[in-house]
Amino acid sequence: MGKVGIIMGSTSDMPVMQDAIDMLRGFDIEIEVDIVSAHRTPDKLYDYGKNAHTRGIKVIIAGAGGAAHLPGMIASLSPLPVIGVPVKSSNSIDGWDSVLSILQMPGGVPVATVALNGAKNAGILAAQILGSADKCVLDKIVAYKEGLKMKVEEGAKQVRDSK
Image (cartoon, rainbow, N blue to C red):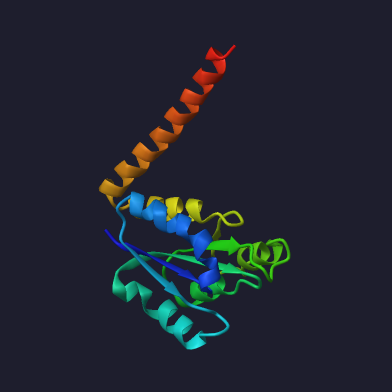
């Protein structure tokens, strides 16, 4: 099984990105977490994007707020799939600047983009990507989705029984 790289622009993104970390740990997927700023550490960004795949990383989740260049810049450098997490930050315009910066990538540089602060879904999507080639991970995804179904069915039963 490969590991997932989780990067973010600053420590202020960590409360949002923790959801991706928690999801992947729940699936027993190895992760590598780091701070890589597109604007403040461009040399580190370049090195990360060019070399992540040589360290066994199979998918990169990149979270960023404000102008949110991190996911797109990593995608421009890396041969790996990149999942962008727009983060609503203190310097953000209700998060829309982050969403559009990550979502509106030019042809040839794809970034899969989840919802604003949607790191949980980024973690699930990364696991699904790994699961397409790893039956153990796939089985965990199937069980997770079955758990979601059961939770909804339990809620529906409680609503019906309360009448």
